[in-house]
Length: 213
Image 1 (cartoon, rainbow, N blue to C red):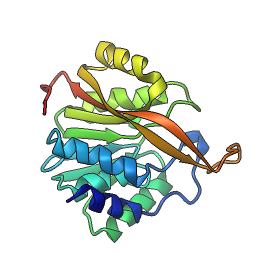
Image 2 (tube, rainbow, N blue to C red; image 1 turned 90 degrees about the vertical axis):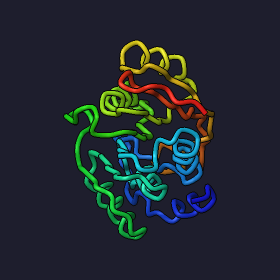
Image 3 (cartoon, rainbow, N blue to C red; image 1 turned 135 degrees about the vertical axis):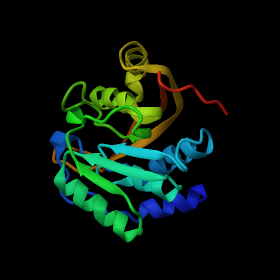
């Protein structure tokens, strides 16, 4: 599937009707989501025929992108029941077979080796400090081959240092910097849309070996 076609499919997905600020629910736009998964698949071979998990899946955008690109099996995990319902509906609309689980990522007890690749757009950690790193820590514990994650560019040094020192990563690489469009979803938002600079990261856990182009 070509990049433009993937982005078009993702652009048709239903998003949050009543987003929850305490969970930092912001939709992952089709532009960023398509490029994250397309890069993971075409540059590193981390999607097609792989078991892929989408942590904090929200409306399912990243996980459904993985399914569209030929993942062997996709599992979406989110703490919010409403998000799981929307994600399941989106999967049905695209006629994709994806499993969705309602669970707090911090309580996930999966063993390493169950999942090849984890993709995630974690909370930025602005409402709950460190929430982004909790997601990343769990992802690196679970994934056997690679983790792809989005983090604010202002946290770049911290993310790299902590992932390599504390979170079982053997490599941590920023693949590119992207503009994350944050729409006017909550009352405290004064502008219709704000652009936030985010890094697209690829992490390799110590149980795997780095891949190069």
